[in-house]
Length: 310
Image (cartoon, rainbow, N blue to C red):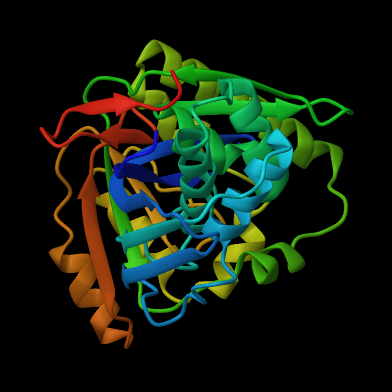
């Protein structure tokens, strides 16, 4: 595609309780990138919105992913201007990094004439992100389950969002870097904890596939990462319990945190949660969002949406 084009990439919530590094879903919170090929070899990135003053226009994940895609294709890297509107907060566990990676790969895919298969795009994105759970829903949408074999080949399955399932994000005013969130996790686990997570993950998959949402309250409990990460997230354990008492089906840590993902089949009144957080000197933002069936997609000048990879 030689002319300008417009990409929209959803935010994601990964791990999904017991699905550490293995499961994620796509959220109706989008970063947008307007891509214009240029005759020069220069890659120009302009960022507004979230992280607008923090992103190096020459060294960032979008540029890195764009360059790596052309390297994978064994092609010279053409010049391009990318005007980014970021709505996904940084370092909150809502997939800002995976959205940037997928945006760069999708931009290169379109500029170079759409040469990447779905598998190739997923392989490259997973190699950059380290795990498939965030990039799969950013590429494909829906609820995605993924794993890798010993050769780093990715296997995945996409589940359509169950009817009636809603998401509300509880986003505190402090960041939690993924590297820091990983450092606090142990190097090994007891057999009891391993069995606990395996059994709960299996039940969670069954709940999402069958639409038996009442199972999620138990199925999305975790012993692998949340007990170690919640102490790094002041106030969020209490807010999670308040959300469950208000009728939520489940409230796992979103990604590596600091956000909590509240899943429900009814609207959740977040005003008491915001009020309580303020009493603890935490500024809490809440976002009620759909779980979306589409991943990265193109928007034409008539606002028609077309998926980049089916």
